[in-house]
Image (cartoon, rainbow, N blue to C red):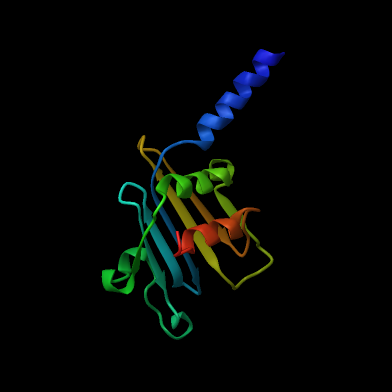
Length: 145
């Protein structure tokens, strides 16, 4: 019985500690990006975009359309601690979609995590989110790490 428990806990820990290469997150409303962040684990940097005028403008609508000069770049002082916080949220167990069909307008978000082994996980939400979502946003947009 003990061996079975050890095996199961070993699998879970391996999954949670998968080495992250990049994280990309964005949120939008009516198709216009309001916030975006790109984290490069290898460079220990995060690029943050905040569109304060998103309600008056139709651009940008994709993270690739954000001019590089519109990002604020921050250094992550302890990248292993940062990665540990992300892994602690068990994003690998999140569903691929979180959608509240009772709300027709509002916000949409997407998260893509690329791992060093070449795998990736993409998650999308529309007016709904997983339990640890707010914690994820705090970690991603924290500029004092």
